[in-house]
Image 1 (tube, rainbow, N blue to C red):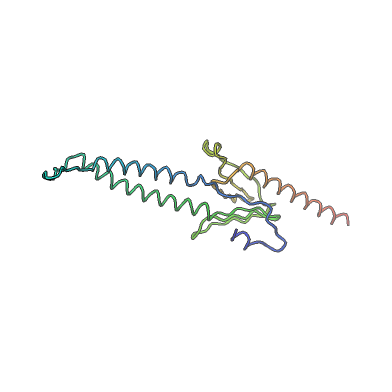
Image 2: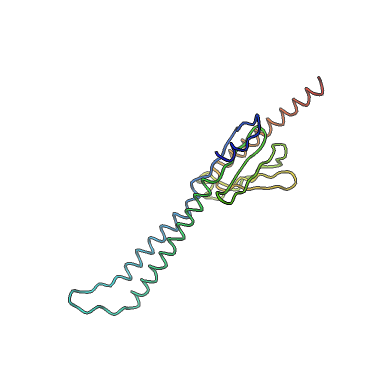
Amino acid sequence: MGYVEDNLMSNEKILFTARVHPAVFLQSVVVFIFSMFLFIYGLSKAAIVSKAGSPPPVMDVTAVLGSFILLFSVGIFLYAIILGLQAAIAMFGTEFAVTNRRVIAKTGFIRRNTLEMLLPKIESVSVNQSVLGRMLNFGSVTVTGTGGTQESFKAIIEPIGVRKKINRIIERYMQYQQKLSNQRAGG
């Protein structure tokens, strides 16, 4: 957990961490499979079979179309690789943790976006899930702070559980602060 551990304050402990769901790779896998089907279809259309000893056949429209489909499938394949790299960066470049004092999160690898919000400054934690997210148990977790500060983290595993854990930690923190306040006032 590089970023989170490197930015802990003294006496701060990580109470909970969340991870990105592998479903972030789903789009790249679907595009990859589509490119393979296009490639195979293009090969079947572009294949020119010549008989031994006969003159080479004249390029027909089907063979030309097949060649264009082959070229297009290579472009789609490269796009699938780019999507896969983006998904890998999202999965391995995202850190999300709740400590005994704050929520700390980082997204990105080279270009970085961070959030460090003190627990008393959190107004709400919301969850947004698609149908696929409900089926595979992932979704976006949005942390909203005072003053309108808002940050969303996509494809978090078990987002409802993450929200519950954050709310429990905030509640315990507030109870502890109230207990300290009462002790100071009474003693």
